[in-house]
Amino acid sequence: MTPQPGVLVSDFDGTMTRHDFYKLVIESLLPSDTPDCWAEYRAGIITHFEALRRYFAAIRASEAEVLAVVERMELDPELPAAVEELRRAGWSVVVTSAGCEWYIRRLLGAAGVEVEVHSNPGRFETGKGLLMEMPTGSPYLSPMLGVDKKEVVRRQIADGRTVAFAGDGFPDAEPARLVPGDLRFARGDLANVLREEQLPFHPFETWGDIARVLLGQRD
Ligand SMILES: [Mg+2]
Image (cartoon, rainbow, N blue to C red; front, side):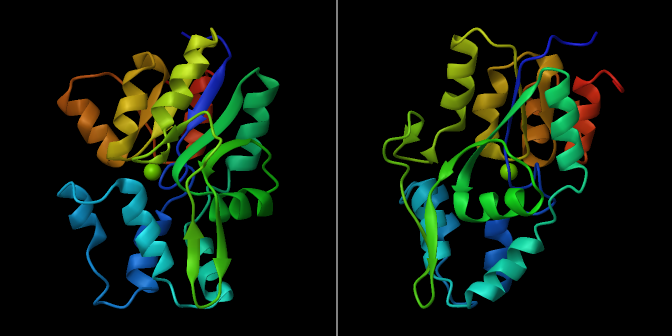
């Protein structure tokens, strides 16, 4: 059954792109003796936001080197056409990410994709790294995550819209649980979480797959 058009809320890293920015940063831009912020996050010592903020602030590469890493995230080449086709069918696309707007807007802008983005603001300063900040003033502000994806989905549902959600990570589980199974798209860790919970979803490889299902071209 083809769902009624509505809004597709999408994660960015690993969902619209093949790779996560923070993982490429850790692999390519940080000294091997950089503290393991994820371990501190998992141990409950620091927040998810603070772990990312520390990694990004530890970057000492030039802006050009960091932008080369942003390129390596590999935005889905089908994204511009898929967003346009969805739009023509009545689906709007909202990007929500607990990462940083700085690289999201660069990749989307370079691909000519204009969509609503809710993420954490940031700026690059040579010698200081990528300085990510809390989205103060955002209706989706979370002290733990910066932007709270679950809240983005919750508000769209509260406004009476048909809401689809796509993601790939553990933090995507909460927003994914809020939408119906036929409008839930997952890969990676999110897919594993949903399988364990026996919650239905559409698996996807690339973002273009999601658009094809929503447009009724494939089940
Ligand atoms: Mg992700």
